[in-house]
Length: 424
Image 1 (cartoon, rainbow, N blue to C red):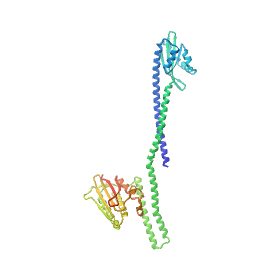
Image 2: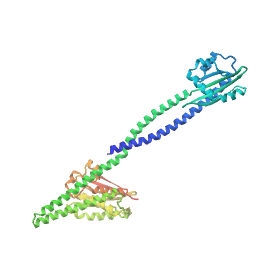
Image 3: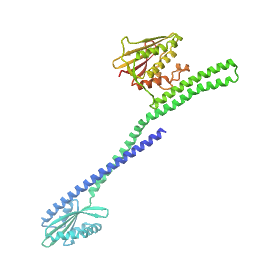
Image 4: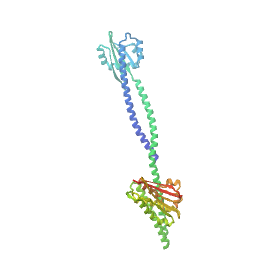
């Protein structure tokens, strides 16, 4: 699914960029074409002016001199004496050229008459449309004692067309290469954009699968207990009722945790911050876990600052929930006659709470996943009282307080959970 989305987004991104690139290229080529066109016409006009002045001063005009003129200028020349073509025009021009110049002469006949009647040598340049093609035309009238000499200078704009073709070819190559680069770039770029979505989808799938598995276990146990009650005596029925109630409570706890995580995902988890004395809060948590720790003969210690500490702006209920989750895990996984220590220290920019135990510790691999939902290390799977959601909830709560929570090894050989909460 994500591969198809990636390809579609890549094609869409490439198509949009290609359209923009083509529009910009077309505008650039159009501007360059106009510039080439205008500059060529200015150059043509200057050349015709220069030729008119040079030709007016020539004393001898013959076939060879006209060939030399044709050779020196990059234009086509047509010479007429009193309306009749000279030998140069008859012998050097093709039938198609003669047909074209006849059309030009007819089109500019009025202009030629005006130039001839003026009695002086002069010229006029203009643009003549020959079908779909444009020609730069120069009309020169040289007035002499024996009549008028007509000269037509034609520029078929072949050089300009070649320049435009070369420019279009270069732009086409650049556009094709750019499209390829855009496609490759957009493919990897959209892949990066989709990566968090893909990861989130994978996590959601795993979350649903894990939640379904965790829910199925107590439900199956309850159903089995109810089935067994049908043929059981009164004492056994009470036993199976106790099992069903126990699993029902586990199911309630699991449901509450799932609802809590759902609130995190929907950004609807309430945080009500107020000035809170963390030492007093930790002392309350410590007293709440004295009895559970004594059941396993676990020594539970708390270390608080000697001096008074300024209150910190947090949600006391949520912070107490985090401490309860960590202490509950510590009591569950610390061996009998073990040790659990709560240490609290206040710094100018943060408050640090460290909860340590002397259990078997947490492997480096487990440390990387310990705060993921439904993640439980192999040793913790032996206990059915934990679903692997507590630490995920704890991390979300601390994150909402702009704090951090991490797990480290300690000198006791066990694990230490370190919580840092900003002082402001």
